[in-house]
Image (cartoon, rainbow over all chains, first blue to last red; front, side, top):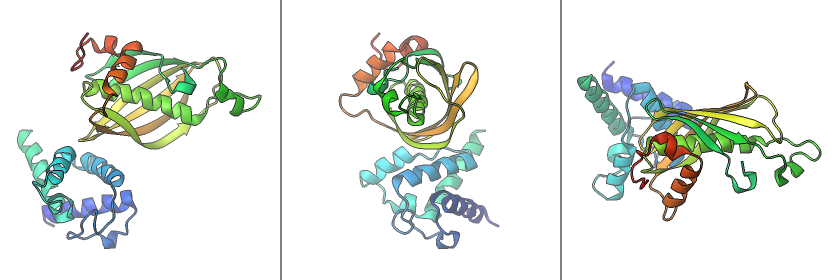
Length: 98
Length: 161
C-alpha cells in the first residue's frame, strides 16, 4: 500500500468516525465541504484527530487566510487527495527536522 | 464566584506556561438567585456552571499560552462527568492542562475538586481567534484582577505592566 493510500484510508476513517459520514461515501475526490457537508466545527474536530493521529499541526489558520484572500482555491486544501498530500508533506517535514 | 455575572474564577494560584497547566480557586457564594431555582430548598451548583468554571480556567490558560494574542471561545465539551454534588459556600479547586495547541484551536482537560475529592472533569475545545473589538482590554483587566498576570510574571505580549 502506498503512503498516499494509507494516509487517505486513515483520514477517511477519521472523517467517517468524527463527522458520522458513511465510509463508502468518502473518496479521494470528495470535497470535504461541498460533497461531504462538513461544517467548520466538524472540520476542527477532524483537524484535532488528524493532528493527533499524524503528530502534526495542520496550518488551518494560514490555509483559511489564503483561501479567503483568493490566493489558493479551496479545492487545494479541502479535496481529500490534496489534503492527504499536504498531510504527507507535513509528516515528511517533521521527520526531516527530527 | 459571581454566578450571575459569569465571573467564575476568584484567583489563579499557579500558572506553568511551559507545562501548559493552571490552578485556580473559586468560592461558591452562600446565597445566589441561582439557588432559588436549582433547586428550591435544596441548593446545588448547576453542572452547566461547573462546566463554565472549567472553561474559564482553561480559557485563562489558553490566553496565557498565546500571550493574549488571540481570544479563546468555547466550541466543544467532551467527556463531561459530574461525580458529586456541591452547594453554597464550597471552596472549589480548579485545574486545567493544555492537551493540544492546534492552528486556530486549543484543547484542554479540566477538573474541579472539592475537599480533596473529584467533583467533575471534562475535555474542552476552544476556537482561538483575534479579539473582537473592545474585548482585549476588559479580558486583560479581568485576568489582572484574578492574578493571572502575576503568575505569568508580566511577560505576556502587550501587557503594559
